[in-house]
Image (tube, rainbow over all chains, first blue to last red; front, side, top):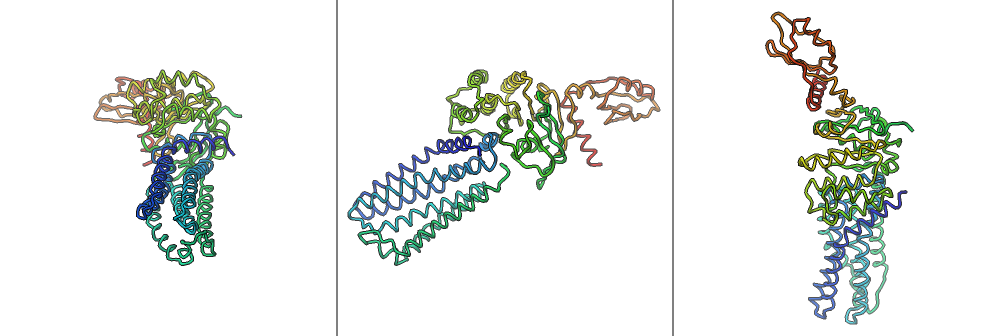
Length: 224
Length: 298
């Protein structure tokens, strides 16, 4: 395998997206500042903003990192380098996922730390937070998978719109589950069977989408 | 190891509205091959197949001794490819691109890259989005040439350039080609550019190679004969004449295998040869394409 060239490509994607990551982190910090407020309305605005930052990043990153490379013909520059279509596809998949996972993980840790540090917010909210934090990761996997496999702006935008409109519906169904919503006021996190089932389901969906993307990427034999 | 830099044998590739049909193409090491064809002739598809970017349905492709596309990674270490539609990262500087390419290619020649910056009038710290089309083309060529590749594949590199930028690019390419070990495939629909730098020329049209010869052979063999038929004379069919346009007693014959005794043959048939004119490469190209299309239609 052509390790050093693939590493260089991943590093290149990271350099190209530092600004997008920084902007996301600034958005997250502003949301965290609002979340520190003791006012309930401000807290809700901060929480929604926090998730919106993740949804926006999940939508923009695959378009910027995958689709724009085709649209702006920089892929022609890359395909002249000593690498195969498979190696390019794998580098693109790894860089896209890694670039999203870093700010996502930072935001999960920051959000959880905020809840743990605030005595007026019951720690029973943490399992639900985790379930909700994984939703943008699923959305990102679907959008990134669509972008990597189709390499089409039209398809990726369509999947992004469908994905982003589904978040609130999924939220609604999760919140209606009494086994999840009933433990929100508990002073300690309650990891009951329903929560574990939902988390397991989310992990399975992500594994399935990424596995399918990897399989279809590995079958590509042509750059264009 | 053979002495061919590029070898395509019976290569075919079919798309819904275009097919590359049974392409045979050979570029000997150290030679500069010009690939001339109208827009949509199959130049870019041929180039993408020989770079391993598109997989041929039939036929065999070898580049610098490597079988393509299976050995494309090994081959591409020694290939420099640039095309008119190649994009660079708009938000990054030329220096960033130079560092990026240098981090991949151990052969990167930094002093030569600096020299090219000067010759092309480029500034390394300038972002790509601030460059004109000509400057972008020159930046792309800098990134390719400073790798010191053994094979240069240039797909329409001079398209859209103003005369000064074209001159600068062609001058640099000519300088690069003084290295006899280096082979070049240069595609264009601009025959002047190809004529200026190529040793050998291949014409392609509608997915088929229609002719491939040394440049000098084209210029030596192709002639336009202006004829006048004397009363009662009939234009004879002469081998080597591929096209005749006749209006009344005046005719223009195009020869693709001109021989000095053609004039005598016409004279003895009662046809006066008013002049024998050399043809430009563009005229040869157009005549070749027209003949090929007529043959296909027949």
